[in-house]
Image (cartoon, rainbow, N blue to C red):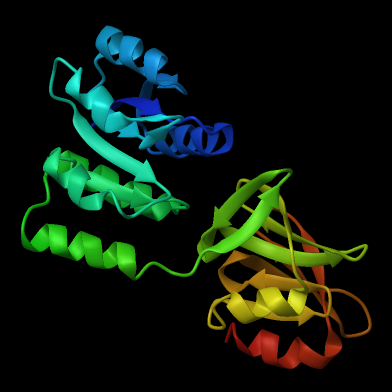
Length: 243
């Protein structure tokens, strides 16, 4: 990044908070503070005054629109939320961007590019952003213990059936899926995922190497280092994807 942003993050869910910190730091941003409550956010924003605020909208029974009324300087504001109904209100507050959870690293990079240009979206740009919200890919519902996690398809590395349970491995964790592998296959984009085995579905873009195994068979090496067997009956078609 040419600009090194100082960023404050207000997010009350630990997993999304940890992931956003990792992504922003990966793009060279400096994290001034993180806060998970309204009161902590209020104190830290005033004390640190970061250039950019990344804000989840709902904080328990309060929301960050109330918080922004108490901010005594003019930061660049980015809203990150699981809900699209606050978009108009967000841009009335001069937000630079409005990002729906779950999001990809590429979406955060696009936001940082917008911040560099200090480009507050108005008129046609606002319309474009709202259309993007409505046209987002279908998100996949999974579980992390008792918590519900919504995954973008491009965050998924692979899914597997293991001991009568289905697990989805994403670039930031392993989650359980309430359904069969067949059910999951039906909701994943067919152009981006491939059933390489009765027990495995992989994201094609997550395959970094196809390795010869034995007796003419192959295994797929994925970006997280996982090795998965490719069934013989789909081997030819799968290998043809990479011609």
